Amino acid sequence: MTKRMFTTGLIVALAMVAVAWKYQQYLTNPWTRDGQVRAQVVQVTPRVTGPLVAIHVSDNSEVKAGQLLFELDPRTYQAALEKANASLVQARTLLQRAKDESHRGHTLARRQPGAISQIILTQQANAVESAKAGVMVAKAAVEEAKLNLSFTHITAPVDGFITNLNLRIGSQVVANQPMVALVDKNSFWIEGFFKETDISDVQVGDTAMVTLMSYTEQPLSAHVESIGYGIAHKDGSTGVSLLPNVNPTFQWIRLAQRIPVRIRLNHLPNDLQLRVGSSASIVIHKKAEHEMFPIFASQMQ
Image (cartoon, rainbow, N blue to C red; front, side, top):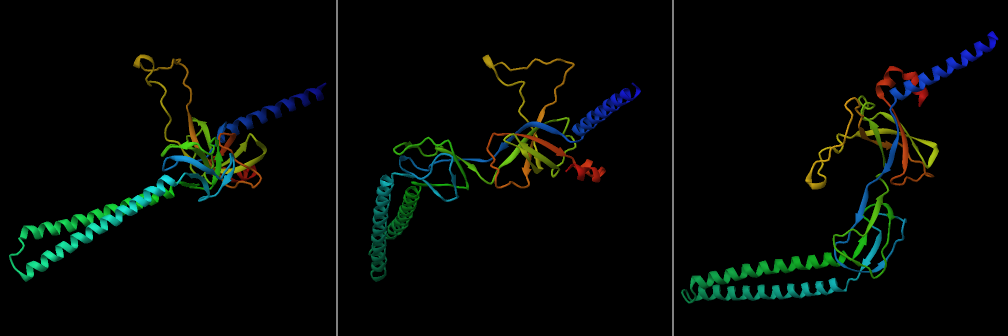
């Protein structure tokens, strides 16, 4: 009987020690399941308006920076370029005429002083300058037309993944209106939301461990890249009838706010694919604790 009681007491004591140790670890190393995979999402936006005549990618495909994605009907912009070139030829002709007239006027004035008034000579010089400006405007129009024609070929600005492609050949795209999302392949990070009471002494550079919900058996080493400096204020926003929204609270309860902490992965295995919006759990190992217990910290990692 005594032996059984001793065994039971020992098991209970070990359980209490394990619970206390786990609780201490929770206080020492902030932990959250409220983590998400994030990445920069580039909105592929056409610079000109026109119908799609070719689509060179498919939905959820990987693309390289500079790769051709879409082609718009170029005929309108080709015609605009030809018109701009014609206007440039016309402007150069007017400039040459103004120069010839100014040259004749100055030659005559040198041969026969007083044959042409100074006012006429000044007007001819002004006509030359105006014609030069006309040539500059025409050149700018040609460059603009060339750019617009080149914009009918839409390319990928970064390496990444095409997402939510719903376009078809013949669809009309509008300038400066996004047409498809491109997830930047090289911009993934993990966003963790920690209680403000848990990160008071968390520092940039602290080591972290990330576990993705889709890869629970493959924890990833990481580090704290930055800590958010603010979150949106809920109370006081405008509601119905332009009155402020104020959430009811209990005076004896103060809920800790959650602050976003950006986590950067140290290495991403080749067989693991991050996806924007997927869930993750994060544990941060504070530097202060590592410095106090270097042996224990090395064993934990």
